Picture 1: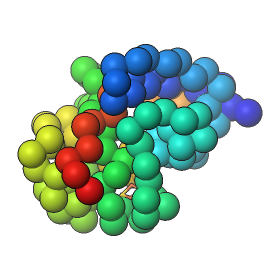
Picture 2: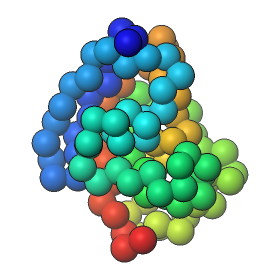
Picture 3: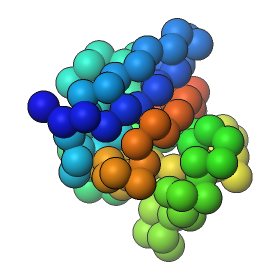
Picture 4: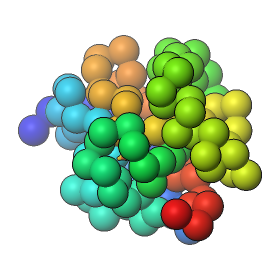
Length: 111
Ligand code: FES
């Protein structure tokens, strides 16, 4: 059990707060474990499916940083719902600097 906080808004608009997230846990793993709707993580975190697509809310995106080229290419495949603050949840690992982060599950684009 960790002590990092994540505010997750699922694909239906329901917001849940998790405040015992362990460092190193990805946002995809957290969502799967807690049953956050709309996150599937089909490839198991390999940056190869985009079923863990999230939007990083507000100023948090700057802290998280932009996707690398491989991740961007995956996100580009869901371009119809991709936004400037899109990231793949499996590529964001929790760390103290991200304590309190707020994210929203992106709508699936038919994968
Ligand atoms: S779980 Fe497949 S890309 Fe994140």
